[in-house]
Image (cartoon, rainbow, N blue to C red; front, side):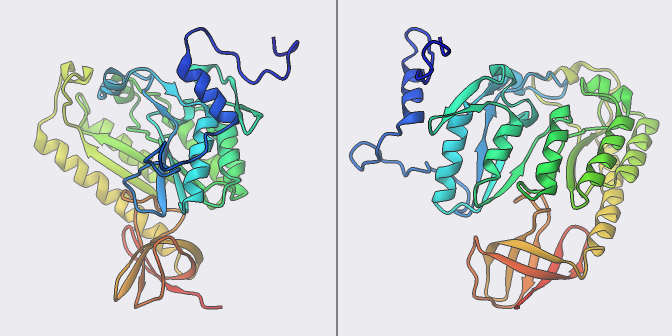
Length: 353
């Protein structure tokens, strides 16, 4: 039909009234008006004005044994890319300086739609992560990607990060390194391949920051499994790491697994894990002393400014402290020089060129 009638903008099935209106508004957004809409163009958000979470899909096709998200939210359902880009543009126009792209499985974006073509401002746009990242990278804001499974699609993002079109920050939830435990978790089980890919990513983007999350004390985890995880951590030298001691979730398949570990052992392994990672983080951050960074201001107090660099996602990573009173506002970008580092945070001074 598109070949015969190229001017047709969308093909929609019968009785799909909401889809019809979405297609119409994709090409001709309704004019704002105080009598027709009580919401601002960028919608209502619960974050500070200068950053916002941009959700690109709901649900998940994975069936991890420790998780019940598919039971709660269903299978992967990607938002049309035109809709996502429209929201991003409105957020940036409203003053957002950082977009945090989130979903349960960001790497799979568009898969459920067959990567179909959508439209934005009358132009065809393919619904996939690479296209989305490229389009978001054209906006005057930081773009940070979260929750990326290590699919091959991730490799295509590295050049965009090296070119600073999106932040060189990868959030990849690896969960463990023992093949036996990963199999019990129903997760990919190839830690050697992950290490090789990390090395390749860092070679192609030397400034890349990698974040991950892990679970220790999973049912059946032996001391040998845990030691393998610690060896992986030492080899991978990840920049930002979160870790949780396993705890049962109502309705999760892992609850029925044998060899559940006592809580005291789970907590002891969590403490050992975080001690190893703290040493890695401290060493990596101390290597930044003397470097220049661009940071985004989050909070301004009478005696200090709290900011973040490209390596720091809000609420989960470290912070950058600028001692002293400064005439700044949340959402300002400033250039700084790193003067000190601790386990997870940096201290800096502004560069007044």
